[in-house]
Amino acid sequence: MDFNFSQSQLELQDRLRTFCRDHCSDQLAQELDEHPRDPQELHAALVNDGILGHCLPAAFGGGDGRIVDAVIIHQALSHASDAAVNLMFVNYICAALVSLTGNQAQKERLVAGVARGDIRMAFALTEPEAGSDAGAIQCRARMAGEAERVNLFPTDRRIFLCNNLG
Ligand SMILES: Cc1cc2nc3c(=O)[nH]c(=O)nc-3n(C[C@H](O)[C@H](O)[C@H](O)COP(=O)(O)OP(=O)(O)OC[C@H]3O[C@@H](n4cnc5c(N)ncnc54)[C@H](O)[C@@H]3O)c2cc1C
Image 1: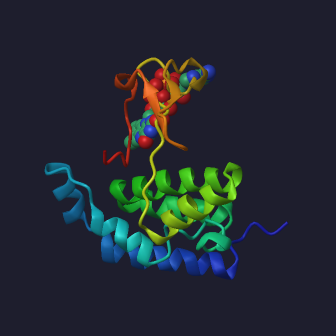
Image 2: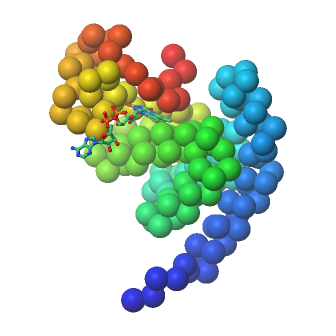
């Protein structure tokens, strides 16, 4: 078995090096630490460079990248920028789950929307008493009256919710 990176994976590593050099400066990291805000320009750059959608299905605007590609992307972004890797990871993992388990309409709206950059997703798993032990979650989802819309009760139990712009 060949454990070396393929040519396309080496090229992806190069793309990531260029991306991090151009968009993930120490200056931006310091600015975000000191004055927290939603780094929309970083999200736009991830979308425009095709990195955010790289591992989503091509049928929904992605690049059909495999799991090793996802590791290459997350490793490079983790090294360069906490903000970039959180934008990448949270959107990618949510859209990837919808692409595995969603219906066609959900995939067309949510997965394609994440790849295009006009939808941003978040997952609300963690509670004060439930992190690794996801079975301990006390919050429950209830239909909110509209199709596909749910509310979480009680709402104040959510913590550590990245990419939550609401
Ligand atoms: C930067 C950041 C962003 C995050 N973003 C989100 C988000 O967007 N949405 C969200 O829902 N959550 C988010 N989280 C929360 C994250 O998912 C939780 O921190 C994670 O699930 C771990 O839970 P915990 O912190 O309660 O640690 P715990 O579950 O209390 O674990 C503490 C330690 O015990 C170990 N441990 C736990 N269970 C076992 C076991 N059975 N056997 C052996 N060791 C064990 C763990 O490895 C860890 O070292 C984020 C966290 C961070 C740090």
